[in-house]
Amino acid sequence: MKKLLYHRFISSVLWNLFLISAGSIVFGIGLKSIAIPHGFITGGISGVTLLFYYVSGLLSPGLWYLIVNIPIFLVGWIHVSRRFFFYSLFGMVALSVTIDLIGFTFPIKEPILAVLAGGALMGAGAGIILHSLGSAGGTDIVGIILNQKFNVRIGTFYFAFNIVLFAFSFGFLDADLVLYSLFMSFISSQTLDYVLTIFNQRKMVFIISDLNDKIAKAIHTRLNRGVTFLNGSGAYTGREKKIILTVIHNYQLKRVEEAVLSIDPEAFIITENTFNVLGRGFSKRKVY
Image (cartoon, rainbow, N blue to C red; front, side, top):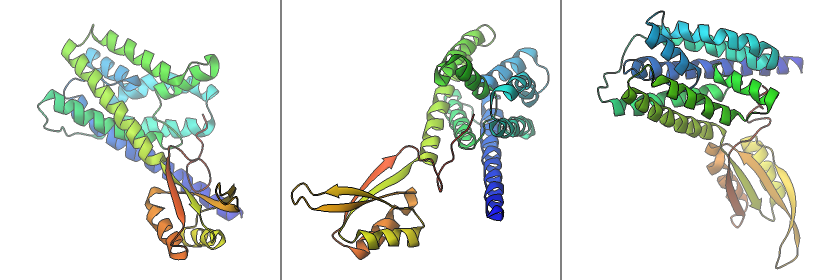
């Protein structure tokens, strides 16, 4: 039992480190290869670091990101969980190193195309990172602290922070660049939401059949998915029967349909999309 738990723990750690690393690479490419060559800034702490980089002309973007995050992590040590802290610390270092290691630039001349490409890449990268049990630091940690201490909604904080950041940027950057940056942040946020939806969305399947015991066994043995029986009754017949409920990954839907219909071709199958599923075999709860 201990060996199994240890194996699951190691697998979880490696998977989360992989997600954070992959997300950092994707985000870093969008930032270093597209946004910075065009003089754009982003939202959040990465936007603050770019503003420091553009105005001062000193150090590197990755080093600025590391420096700005240091006080945030010092405060975060007190207020966030150790698991979230260390995963986020890894994410912050991974993103800082990735930004400085990337040495190529995408040959995109049109600013609007750079906005679309940069926003999509950074949003996808951020979405991959946030699917892990950590983050890349910055406003994620600040938002969590404000939420815990002052009940400030994290989304409200993000919005207010970025409004102040972009308004402040007008004093240092060309107005066109700031407006392009605003649009890029919008593209990034939409992409982030889409990526998180892809990661989290599952199928909830209800099955009504007189052969529910056989169907439940088939789902468990063929797909290794759990099954729950719900009590129901027919409105017309008044006859009580069991309704099968199971939650599956999107790619398993066809296999469930095949398993059910091979046992009972007359079975009634209802499928619904779910936004998020927590529990064994699916996502773990993110503890801040």
